[in-house]
Length: 126
Image 1 (spheres, rainbow, N blue to C red):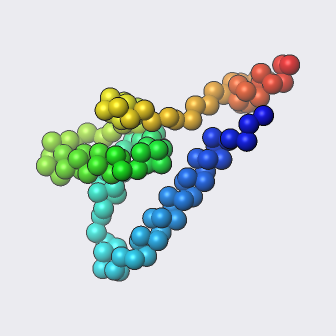
Image 2: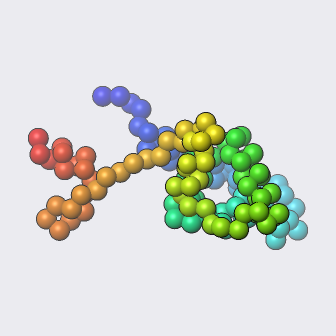
């Protein structure tokens, strides 16, 4: 059995990202608290699982994601992009520009009125 656990890796990466954001926000002067960042403006236009896709992309491709957010926010500010962005559309955008963002996929099934993961169901059948 391998010691590599992708879920644990993702949890640790999320915690690290939160700590980095907290440290960087503590360094900013208090007058900047009311100013929206590009990321905040971008998040306002995300729907469905868009925030989940964005967070995963930031963990896997942090530098590239900042560039993409900046360009999309330019389009939003110029009025060229007025629609909301779904998680699927954002994931498709990342993949189309050559950044294969790997999302966690979970398949749940209903068994005797309960929702269980497919992996648990297959393990119980053995």
